[in-house]
Image (cartoon, rainbow, N blue to C red):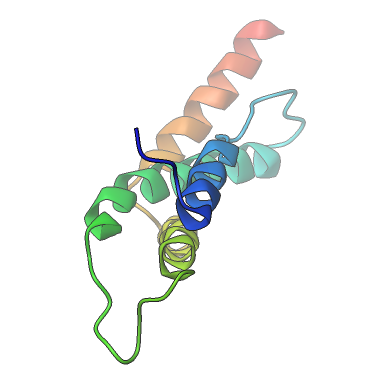
Length: 106
């Protein structure tokens, strides 16, 4: 088995550190909306990762040891931007479910 390079180890650590938003006590509708949007951003980032995984940077503008790490962070930010600008409608469904769960627990 081949040892992982420092870049591969860094990329693996970055992926392992990603944790979806946790649902705790939500005290307001705005807080529920924020958690739902964060969840949609996480989901979109995870769905976009495979699309960019095997792309090679064109010289002389790309490549290098930090390219894979930078690309993973860029894709996460794309997911956040997509969710912030309306996303795919997942946040609305998640927010409605959060509020429904809060109502049922009281």
